[in-house]
Amino acid sequence: MSKNQIRYFYYKDEEKDLHMKQENKNKGFTLVEMIVVIVIIGILLAILVPGLFKYIKKAKDQQALIECRAVVTAAQAEALELSGKNKFIPYEFTTPNFLTKICSEAGVTGSVTYGINFSESPDTEISYLEYKTKGDIIVAYDINTNVLYYIKESINLSDMNNRLHNYGESFDKDFGTNYKKWNDARDKYFNTDEALLTQNEIKLLTERTTLTEEKLGSLRWLPCRYQNEDSTYEHYFVATDKSGQFNVSLVYYNGAYYYFQGNNGKTGASSMTDANASTIEKLKEAASNADDLSNVKDKWIRIDK
Image 1 (cartoon, rainbow, N blue to C red):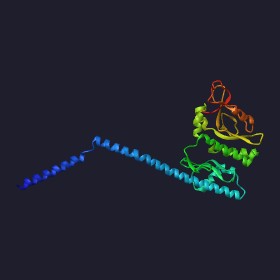
Image 2 (cartoon, rainbow, N blue to C red; image 1 turned 135 degrees about the vertical axis):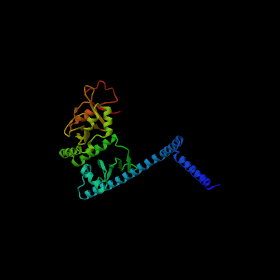
Image 3 (cartoon, one colour; image 1 turned 120 degrees about the vertical axis):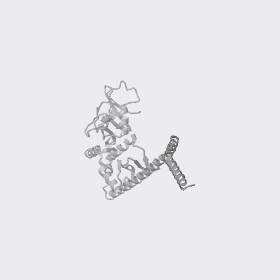
């Protein structure tokens, strides 16, 4: 075989190899192969992602518990220090500036909701506290439960009782019959974010009354009270947009929400007088929204469902 023939076959083989490589290079995935890969990836994501989110939530919850412990420790230390100096006033542990100071001392970026409750004996022992992280995780500290610290999924409607305790009943211990100091304290509360209606409250009251979300979002809860003949107090909240306004549509009293139904079947307003027993009598005579209200006019309605 001549050199030219050898050279011919050599280059022919090289050209064939190059062509085959080019064919393999241009060859892509088939549709079936791509679907199989996508399905496999989907299965892996379905297995891994929930576990990952669960792990992240658990880590955030754990951090929230740590922060709440730090706040409780700082608040308890502050209470004991003030008590040793005969300067312990439970009301101070409900004021926004004081609570901000405690969170700062604890080295956290969240906030205490509804103030801090103390036990009867010893009166400097913290009995209940709620801490909300910057990421809106709510941790409760409660000495009356088996688990001292626990995560609360949301602020529920019954938490109004905490408001009543912190911005109502706890004032009595500090101010008694000194209405000027009590009024000053509640007016300070009225101007804090804690006085705003919660989203749960707005949702409930939008469904049960004819008030709009916009209107409800402009209202704040104002603590009120009147003194019984036996010197005890009845406490309630009115929802108003002015601290001195008592011509209101909504009231919270004795664990229930009330709204005033006018003569046109729509939510109206009625005069409520602080420190007047007739105010509570109106609520005690309220109808239930579980009843037939077709002929009920100018009367307070208790939300039972």
